[in-house]
Length: 114
Length: 115
Image 1 (spheres, each protein chain N blue to C red):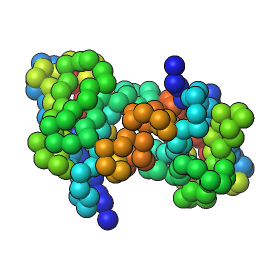
Image 2: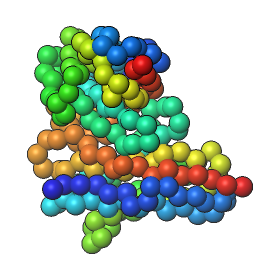
Image 3: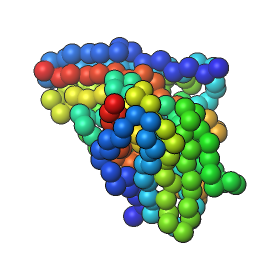
Image 4: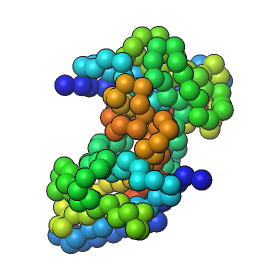
């Protein structure tokens, strides 16, 4: 079955430290890939997306993600975390065959400490 | 630019009462529309999506229903609320005609508490 896995439920990092949030998918072919962020009590905001081309994708707020076909992964990174980055992060996947909506991972909650 | 509105922002309703949540999109035409629910501490659950007026696909059987009376309006309803209907309801839209694999843009959400 097609699925999206975010292995880490909760991550805590120090302000200024680097961040990597993991996302793995199981699809037969390369899907379309997305990362979203959700602050408490708010809707989701699109950080970045990958459809094709360069496997390193730049997004908003200083985030980037790298698609690795061999690992079926699309990990989100930021070189230096700010306290305002504390939020819930969701990876989403859409298969590039057929026509079905995005499938979201269960999310990773990021806490930032001083 | 496109904007998406949801109302009300918060709602407290007794068990057994009806529900109507509304979502409207501005600045685009023929969007695909989606309803999601987030229970406390859990991920997103897709409830319904629509690729056009009157076209509704249901992902999860439950006591909720959805309607799309106009191109940019999506309504979530229930005749009788259950305690388990409490949660954060999110509406989203995407472009791309009837293709569903494009990025979705989310509204601010409605916090529903059933008492």
